[in-house]
Length: 93
Length: 502
Image (cartoon, rainbow over all chains, first blue to last red; front, side):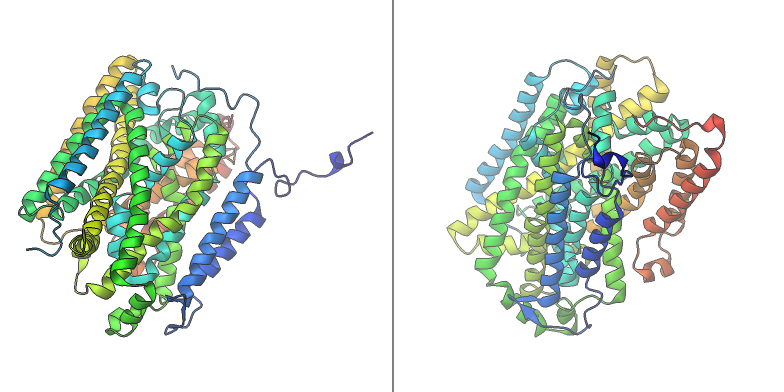
């Protein structure tokens, strides 16, 4: 029986084993940067959260989000390794 | 007595002396573990390193004297806005996603040693083979210089010697220890000392967190104190203005694309024993900015609230000033500061030794073997590389001592910025080149030259400064435009055939 997925066009974004080059991934990173960089806060905003300026907390959370996303990508999207990849390096000479 | 001096007494000095002696012993162990006299053995440790060594050597290499002194100094000057550093240190790991998997695979297939080995394999372009190594050597030389200067400043804070004498002793003594263990054991010595230095550095940041918490109260107290202070103190708590936000974005981009291409970090990607080793190390690295750069920011902000009045390069000494206050408070505080000081030395030396080893590898393999003596034996090249380390360190130590005698001393963050403006120009050659087959060597070369001309042409330009963006990013935009346009034109020419990516 034929594999039903064989006819589907190859989409690097959906193929977890191939690449990090996917517009969805970089859009999420862009959104996290847009949240993390405090450009949208009023200039005299001094509200505090846990003793820190509130904008600092939001910015740190965005950074944590980027770390979590990166971890998930490394675990699930790392480009597939050829069979010989884990062999020791050859002599450069 | 100078308020930034921490006279350690015999207990603390003995601890630090043992620590430094331990580094020399590790260098000796690295020498005993060598398998042959090849370049790969000396510069990459033979068959590669496992997860623990790779993680700690990456960590100790990327978190440096700039993190401890430069980041805390900058946070002292601009306040909470310097959590920019947490973002850009995370951006470095994100930047790796663009090239590390492919580069690691290629390096194992073709036995790369220096970053330029990839560029040579990919483009076979003489111009790139000349410009890229020189660019990387200059950028790393700048970084090594910043570390040497920080070593001098560290010792200024440790002894009661006259500041200029302490600075010279710090630069010369620590550079000497570093070059000795590196000459003995090459990459193994550097990576294994990084394990010790990285571990102490992690402990050091933990200690730092406890110190500022117990000595100066919670962060809420610091925030309140700054808010109640002068207009400039209050600005350290408020969100940045438009230019500050653009500068923040600029840092994230330039670090994500430039710092991920640190030549010594590229060599660590080569040195990972397997893909899983690299992946696991990068996962841990993704979270370390929150336990490292963030703590450095807290130190700077705490200093701004409790020890006001430092300007310019003087503010890079805020960490030593705070440590001195903690040290005098109790016996526990004394020993915590001793451990922390060892961590500072570890941060400085681990970054500096990696720079030194990488500079030596690039001059030896890319320049000497590539252009001067193509038939030189591996044994001769390894020997030459060791001599080069001594020459490079001696030269830069001299420059570090000279720069400290200048009236206007450069801040550590300023020195750091210059390096990335240069390194980021290599991004198209590495990152685009690994994914776009039509990118040609000629296009990358002229893109690189254009990028460098624009970057240095804009240096000091008032309008560029007012945008908040690094001049290197304007250079990168020009670089990319030229590289892509030329590739589209030249790749139709059969003489510029697309090179192999595998």
